[in-house]
Length: 192
Image (cartoon, rainbow, N blue to C red; front, side):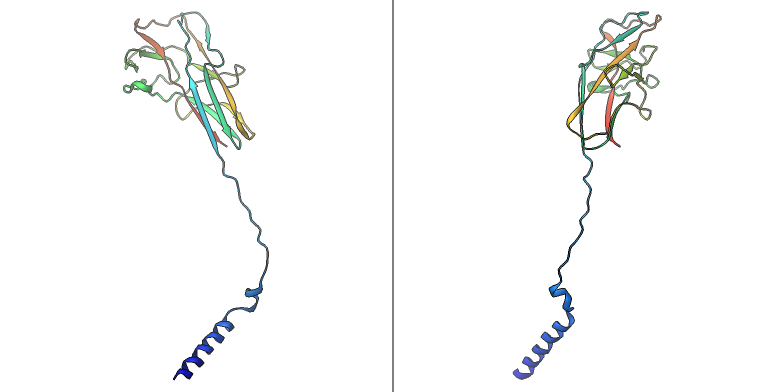
């Protein structure tokens, strides 16, 4: 009986050896590895810009470089857009009224909210992302303006120099003493 078990074990070992292809045990070779580096990006924005007292019929008010600081850090081509999301900012509801996209609108400074049926300036706020060479209107979500682009790897960061310009018409209305004209501009960075 034990002889039969030993013979069966030897047959199983032989069958196992025969099933394994001979070249596999001694095969050596090479493998080509390919891969891609995933795109990565970080973007930060800080600061605020004040235009002091806007006087009707005084043509243009500009902010200066450095009031709003933005930096793009990326390993590939990128772009920065700016738009008016009609949001209220830190104060909560009500949001900026529909139809005022890109326009500085009446804002209650004590409560940090927009006036629902408040006044707004006639001309859209414009922005330059290149330090003042080119200005574009601030538009609504979905029609964001590209204000800066880059094609290079910027591991140390590329500054986006945002400057705002507001043209004030002769027929602008004053807001209540406790209020001001206000707009929140949303910046968004993406990789191409």
